[in-house]
Length: 509
Image (cartoon, rainbow, N blue to C red):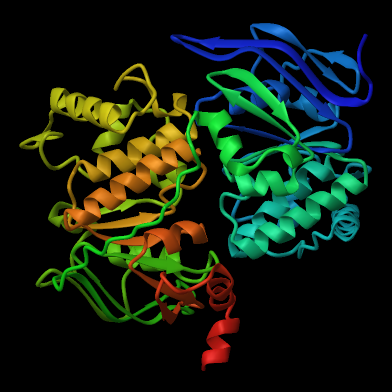
């Protein structure tokens, strides 16, 4: 007999793909009006299970019950009609539309045969007031902070009447203050009777917000636990069979040799606003320089300027002994500047292309990927196989399309192809965003090992523990300016957060 106190009940869910068992006899029970977390390594089957619940995929076997009623979802619309909404890790918003237009898109209110935007606006304002998620309906999405974009995505599913929300890695792109705001929003929703399914790799956050936690490993459910009876170390051991990794670096490998020197760099947006203002710093061989800041304060523009994607209006950028301000992105890459991009889907991968083609990106003009003007397919496949083996990318082989990999394995491929090229300078933007503790530890180990061999790293991250643990120096960027140069050995996350929000910068002015 069905348990009607459960919002969601999945029983015996099995889903296979060619050569891969994604879900095997999975069990999941989510109580109504609770926050239920799902944790597990990348490739553990979490995303597949949620895609099945949201109607994006059909299980090979097993049953789904929603509020005690057995359902058979063929499309996401079927799930939406049953009150299920999903907010994906990679936002699905149209940047050139307003908040209002994005939220109502596909569910437009009408008055007769006319669109009724006034009704849509009123409903958005009511939802925002009810859950503490006020948004400007007329703001263009491209102008929003990451936190505001996420609130827009959540508002979209609430606008469609969802009472069961699936949130996939909702804190991966947020700074601590935004995480606190999100958690307050989620608790407000639960107080109003909503049910939240929360997928995350941040175990401390899971323990802080969840009413219950389901652990998945290798496509199976291995445990459902009460957060009050377990700590992060024990949870990590359930997930991966090992202790929670730490990014802490103890020994210094910094030399006196400057690999990258940035002096007085300024840059403008297309509409003439200053987005980088007198940015100055050096990175030496064997040094990791961390950049902390609330997203949208110039980090993306700095990366673009360093990679030659954005022109600088004044200042200089020197790589070794060369002024590279006029160099193309191709010239900078070939000279030995590597990059791990902030958004693996938009900037790092061709999702519908095989892994060997993805491993070529940024390196397609040099050996082993190129043989003169021609692509060396054998060399590309061999190099990709080496990356797969060294960085433990879980895939049948180099000819699999990138879209078939879990997010963490996609990230390991991107990190691996850059590290194995042995750059002199690596710009690492959120290198462990949205990946599990095992993959995170592996990437930290690679960065530390390369640093010991002389690699100069610019580390941009929203993970304050990662920044403090890995960096030899910490710079804080705020409104396009470097406002603090801090010692990671003595700075606290609270002090760092204060500078990131401008408070510390004002106090020290």
